[in-house]
Image 1 (spheres, helix red, strand yellow):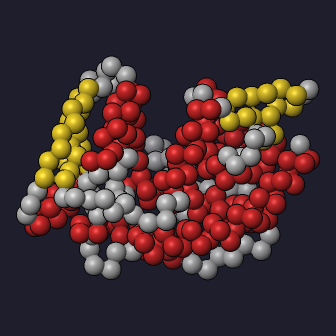
Image 2 (cartoon, rainbow, N blue to C red; image 1 turned 90 degrees about the vertical axis):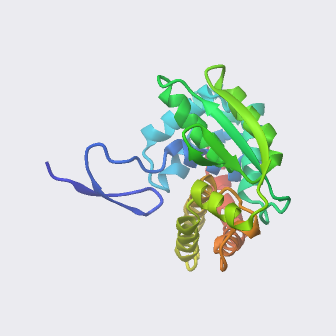
Image 3 (cartoon, rainbow, N blue to C red; image 1 turned 120 degrees about the vertical axis):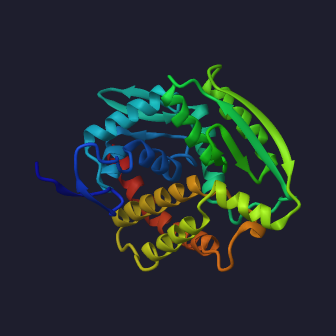
Length: 287
């Protein structure tokens, strides 16, 4: 069997497409990012065709977009409203809350600086038969800034996120059990060692540098280009935040690239978003 080259919707080369190859970015992930930038601040929603056309700009076929809309509605984040033969998608209160929380995390103007030297430990147990729950636990705790020290042992330098960790456990149901502990290490060397165990800081630094290089030069000239580049920008930043625990400066290497990348994100978004929204508004007027 021959293989073909595959290119992700964000423009990155996935390499040869082979049976069982890892999936690229999902239409649903892009859908939520576009809704966050184009719908969250409005009270009106979006036509199906507007969403289909928007995600077509970043490489998704109509079938995948319609599936993403249906799954997002099934998750309680969107509600379809029939208007004649057309459908308008409204954010539900839960959807608005979720996108607002994500917006606060994605576009924070700087890292958290509340570290006192305390660590938050989370000990979890998930039945072997619940692989999907383990995946959801890893994803949710990664977004909350937790690193793994081994099976069922999670670590965060932010004790203030205890409530977020409890909410993750509650959302996953009674099959997932967890215990939260707070601890302190006074030895600076041990702190660095612990951080290196839980997170690959060197690789994360490399990824931030790649992000800065990827978005260093592009300057979209048209509204459709602006929307596509904005979607790619925010999607790649979200992937970085899923891997980044927001470590305090004391635990970061000299020359840390994360803050330079954050400045690129905030600058590009401020410049591209108005142009992208002109595309969105024009499509909305067409219905």
